[in-house]
Length: 343
Image (cartoon, rainbow, N blue to C red; front, side):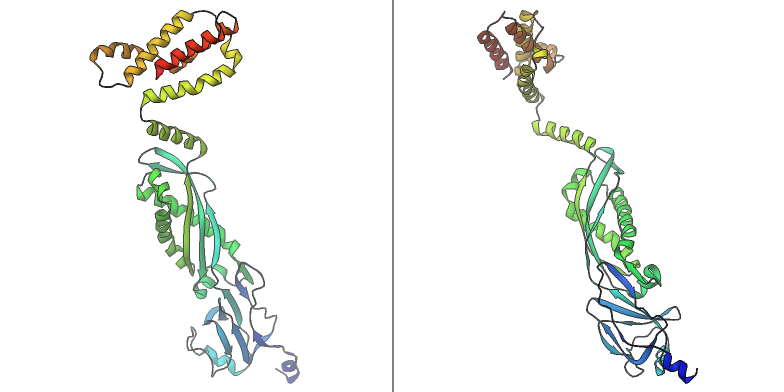
């Protein structure tokens, strides 16, 4: 190399990264045909690490601190034997900085319901979502497996891989645990801890550390949730007789507001009232499981009668009132009589 060529060369005196762009995990120092000057300064800030790559191979890793790049002050840790001898003259090498800051509030969730076999409900489809956080701990592994020789590598590019791997592990965990959905939903913190334990080796394999993983919600699709709500309601009610009374009492105001449903039924009042009495007796007997055997026959006959028939009888009475056959006072009295027999 001629003296003129040497003078024209550009040398790097300071190597540093100020992390101007948020979400960057790896950043390559721009060389642009420049060489590192012997005695140059390398600044690695807190929450950063840096690596030197010589001829495609990681030569050294630098923790936070300020370094004077010379043969006398090189760190003890080196991956290439005697690579530091290159510092005897200006040299060309790739320098990569890595952010070790914790990447917080990273969201995960099931884009579509996942199908699992639940020991209580059978085959069901579940949704789940939550947040997780991680940070980079091994830049050498991350360089070799993830970022490579890219000028810049962001967390958004890694997000899909981490999220989909997490969801796959969650599906396996559901299947392996054998825990019923209701128990799983009630113990989300414990489920999150087990999921984090299962995912930790995956992050380690990428040179990352999984700091936290939170399951914020585990739920069924809307149509299955409605069925579950009905089942929970039945369990809370506990007694079918009381549930029937509750349904009838709620249906009467709605039917009274629907004039089309209450009008046009002018016949069969006596039969309707008689039927209402039978229903009242049957439900009273249903509320007394220790009653005498003689009550078994009426109860068995009433077992085939639905609550809708009671509502139909009251609708007929209302129709008679609308036609002027019954007065409002008579209608209210008959309605009260029917409801009283249901209590």
